[in-house]
Image (cartoon, rainbow, N blue to C red; front, side, top):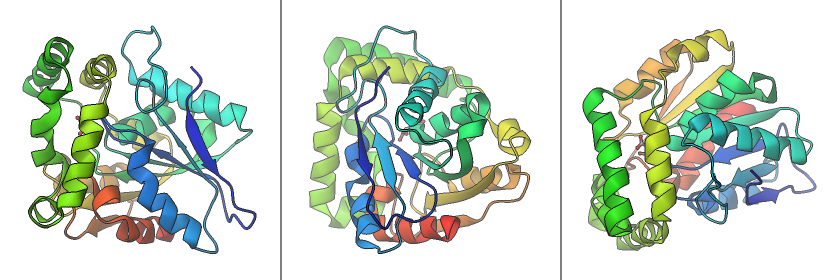
Length: 260
Ligand code: MLT
């Protein structure tokens, strides 16, 4: 599957390319501000950010729901761009795809930045909720996603930053119901990934919004401790689950301690 993507490759790009994988049910647009901060820095890396299949401008295709397929798409994109090794950063669902990349395409990954995500598999009730949402969005469209605003954004953003709330609302409304259902089924099926973090031997860094109620600081700490070499955990203040949208400069600052 050919993924729509943006490739920012400034002449003074520094270090390994950084590949950013977005959250559910959003698109690469969620990294607009992060990329803006990176590009403004004189020593930033080349940054590639795809729309994962079904989201943004990428087609959904006809495959069965699977995070492995999403990882294979990213590997294909890296091959097309001639990238042999990268720093892979994934936020939430993007983090699940990052862990699938470690299972399937370890050779492409130098190190990982796991943002507002978790390595555990779903409990039965969470899995059942996903399957219910897949059916609901298919029947009723993306308005069933609106309650997600309460958990995607932190309390600070919801109470004091209406333009961010409006922006994320627009993104939820614009999602393709078929892709939302597909991705929920794919995420429901994901395996636990603690072992792969350790066995891959990859270096990692963990970022979490202090107000994230979907992927908590406990989840972040558990992931950090799973790496063969314990990863640092960077807590982003006044940000929730979408830390890269809510506090982009702080997220870049936390990321930059990873690759310099
Ligand atoms: C996301 O932000 O990608 C989702 O919260 C992931 C999930 O539903 O587990």
